[in-house]
Amino acid sequence: MSDLQSPSRPRPPRDLGIKRLSLPETLAASLRERIIGGEFSEGDQVRQEAIASEYKVSRMPVREALRQLEAEGLVELQTHKGAIVKILPLEEIAELFDLRVLLECDVLRRAVPRMTEVDLQRSGAILAQLEDAYKKHDVATWGSLNFAFHESLYAPSGRVQSLNVIRTLNMQTDRYIRMQLLISKSITRAEDDHRKLLRLCRRRDTETIVAFLEQHILQAREDLLEIVKERRGI
Image (tube, rainbow, N blue to C red):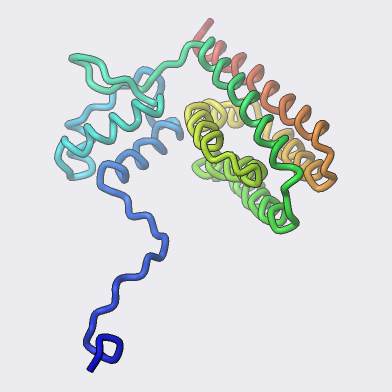
């Protein structure tokens, strides 16, 4: 009997596209959400021993997770102190938003001519989820859904490396954006801005869309800097 006829021949496992996270990646994801969500504040020490005990793991995967978060700009690993939730100077916060303007406006300009109706429907569905999260005060999902909406508008650009950098920039500013929304009660304006972005994309008015996105990001930067100054007593 040939190999093709043999019923006992094992089949290779199918690749279903499911990403299996390692233990350090799982720990990093959990700690990232806790930092972004405000459970750990700027300057707080993240003790390896305490984290290892809490998650019932050894210190090695915790150390690897913290190194990953350091690479993302969320913590600093300091000699004799361990991991400290990074305190970004105001100038660096402003710089992150300036970088967002440069990259996000560029990829959106490239994306608009390539958008399909399916792309726009997907963006609309994500926006509906984000607005539902606002109504339910589901703070934990605000950041991920906000970025998912923006990313859905940028994705048709095909700029893979730019989108990876944009994802990192948004990760670094997410904790401040959530704080801004909670303190300034600017959710209504965020909703209005997102709806307008989607409407403009449907009209394919590229330059108007890009100008509005720039205004949207820069306004968030100015509002946020004022809030951070107030909280830091500057």
